[in-house]
Amino acid sequence: MKYFLVLVLLFLSCSKTEKLNDFSLRVEVNGLKKGTLYLEKFNDSTLFKMDSAFFKGNNSVEFKGKIENPEMMILSLSYENESKPKQFPFFVENSDMIVKTRLKDFGYKVYSVGSKNDSIFRKYLEINKKFNNEKLDLISKSLEFKKFKNNDSVTLYDDKLLTLNKRQFLHNANFAIRHSGYTIAPYIAVTDLRESITILDTIYKSLDEGIKNSKYALELKSLVN
Image 1 (cartoon, rainbow, N blue to C red):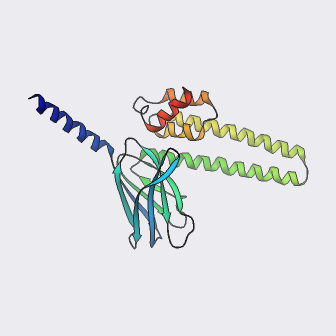
Image 2 (spheres, rainbow, N blue to C red):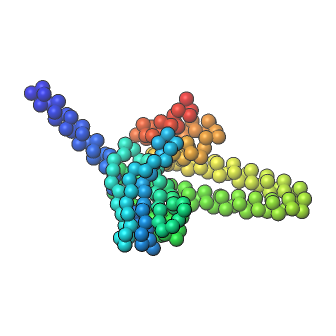
């Protein structure tokens, strides 16, 4: 009886783990006739290939695997005679996911379903793209005035750039706090907000308990302790 109970508990434990860790990711690349798509992830700051799939007239490929928690991975596409692969990040979750993009703007226009963290990440990228476009405009104007040695105007636009940087930083911090129930929150903290220990600590304390054992939350914890 004792051994029977142990076996039952082991079976239930394994079943639960497998159920939690399974993921399926289907990727469609419109306009691609032939190429290889790689699913990659970082391990100790080194990017390595987890799996690969081939496009040969088919309009989609599928990856399957297991992960402990939602995690940022890289979709990397090699095709024809391109010297460098096209890449973009995607938040993989323990679910069935679909990603759609086009060859001509691979990674720039992405439609995804099945990953809540990735949906939030796409909104985050969109807002930051607007900030970055504003910054490029200010830098361009500052450089223009430098040509004419108009130091007052250069200072004006450099000050505007500093203010915009602060606005973007605070926005990203608030964005992470607003989404403290998702793994995207500590991910944003450890990738974009390392300049302020106070902000990192605030974000960590705001995390839901269920998130605090995730990969990025543990990394965040190590930065504030």
